[in-house]
Image (cartoon, rainbow, N blue to C red):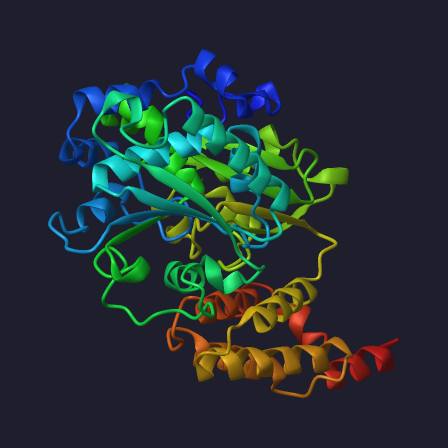
Length: 425
C-alpha cells in the first residue's frame, strides 16, 4: 500500500522542520499546482480523486469546493477543522504532531483553488502543544516564501492563522466552529445557507478536516486518478484510523479504503488482548452505532460497507471491546459525555440527553424499573433526527444500537430482574 498520510511518521517529528520536509518531497505539490494548474483545474483534480471528507460526514471534497461561488463580493476562506474531540479518535493529532507541513501545504493548495487569501486552523484547545508545533511550522513557511505575499513567485497571496478553541465538542460541527471563530458562543447555525455560500464573516467558506487537507498534496503531485486507483472500494485513497480498546497494539493505522475491519484488528493490531473473545466494535468514533463480531466479520472500512452493517465510518475511531465489557456501562459513559457536551441550543438534545443520563444512572444503581430499557430506546428516538445539529443523533444512535444488539446487558440492571437472580441464588 502506498502511504499517503503517514509516509514521514517514521521520522518521529523531524518533518516538523521545514528542511526535512523539503528533503522528503515537501512543497513539490504546491510548486507544481501553482505552475501547472488553474484554480478550476485543481478542483477538477480533487473531484477525480474521489476524496471524501475524513472528518466524519464523508462528503465529496471536490464537490464541496465546487459549491463556492466564483464571483463573490465577500472574501473567501478555507478553515481547517482541527477540533478533534470525538472520543476514540486521535489521528489528526498525529498528523499535526509528526507532519504539520503536509497539512499546511494541502491548505495552501485549497486556498489557491478557492481564491482565499486569509485562512484559519481551528484547533482543539487541549492540543496546546500541537498549536505551538503548527505555529513554528507556519513561521518557517513564511520565512521561505510558502506563505505570505506572492508565494513562490506567483501572484497568489496566502496567510494562515491558528485559533484554539476552548474544549467544546460542539465546535467540531462546522457552523458552530465558525461561530466560535468569529468570537461568539459555539452554537450551530441554521442551514441553508451552507458555509460554502455564507460562512466565516458572511463570506464563502470551505471547512475541511485535517486528514482531508493532508491528502491533497499527494493528489496534486501524483494525480487524482492515481489516488483513486490505490483502493479496495469505490472511494479512493487511504484512511487513517485510531484503534483503541482491547487490542494488543493500539494506535493509528493507515489502510486503503475498503480494508477488512477484522484484518485490521487481528493482523495489524495483534488481535484482542489477553486472548479473550471479541464482544463488540464501535467502528467510527463514539457517535456511531455499535456492531457485533458477526457484523464486524462482514465489514470493510469504507462508507458503503460500514453502512451495510448498520453503522458509519465516521471519524475513524475504532473502539474494540472484549467479552468482559459491560455494554450498558460503556453506553452510559458515552451518554454522560453527550449530555455534558450538549450546547443547550435545542430542546430535544438539551432535555433528551439529560433524561437519558437520568435513567442510565438509575439503572446503574440496579434500581431500574420495568420498562426502563424501552424508555431509554424511546427517549433516544425522541432525539434522533429532531435536534438542531448532529450532536443529538450522536447521543441517540449509540443507545439504540446497544439496546438492539446487547439488550441483556441492559435488562440485568432492572430491579425486578436483580431480585429474581438473588432469589434463584
